[in-house]
Image (cartoon, rainbow, N blue to C red):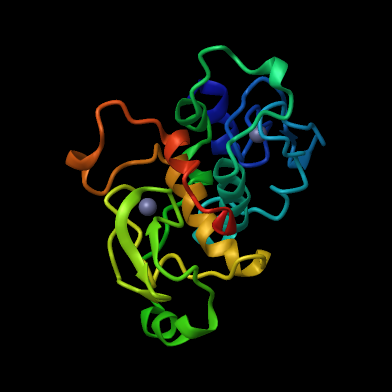
Length: 214
Ligand SMILES: [Zn+2]
Ligand SMILES: [Zn+2]
């Protein structure tokens, strides 16, 4: 993070020279509290569109922004303008340009009982051995349409609690995408660091997310 980001953060309505979705920092995206309608060369977000209405500092105010980011990284984090992509581009490094107030943590599930009760109203792909949030493969997260309440070794999500959703329904995928978007924005930390492969590639893992959950 550079000094200009800290200044923008502290003053609230000052200029933002970073994309709130992906951290790309070559353009001015917000000025004096207004979007510049700049289209990000990296994620393709136009300032004032996907990030409009986002309120820094709380999960509720940022869930939508996290969800857009989660969809983008879940779909391969493709560059809007590939010619601008640096040869040695690092997604997680770029995301660190986003000031912490735009990366508010996921709150613990206060509505745990309700989530468990509502499980039958959501979708599943039968038996699922890839994490819907981060794409880690190998654990049985859902068996025959029932969640196993397995904690993902990588992103730490619990199946049946943090990954409820319905394929094809934007509103019902929001929670999954928001959690994914937040996880990458804080550097994609492993819940069980010892399980992290030495040569780990976050985008290769995200590529394993079944299309229905992207
Ligand atoms: Zn962007
Ligand atoms: Zn996961």
